[in-house]
Image 1 (cartoon, helix red, strand yellow):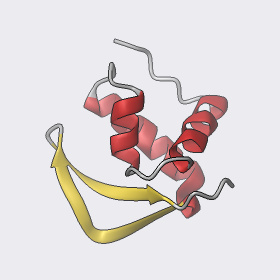
Image 2 (cartoon, helix red, strand yellow):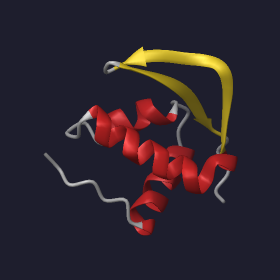
Image 3 (tube, rainbow, N blue to C red):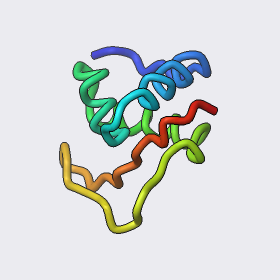
Image 4 (cartoon, rainbow, N blue to C red):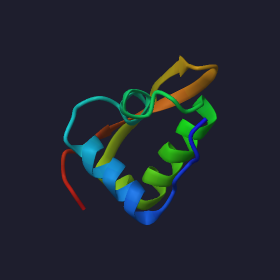
Length: 81
């Protein structure tokens, strides 16, 4: 199991990569970091949204069940902050 790296630099790197694609943030993290657990993936999702929420769009009703969790879809606006 990989160690969770929530450093500012790593979160910025993941955020930047996420902004260059069209997939929802959780789906992007699942492809980008397939070796980590769903819980670790949610930690990354939380850290990215904590720092860069304004760079993502979401609809309160747009959620899906994945990896045993209900996840809201956050889509990148494609704008780097």
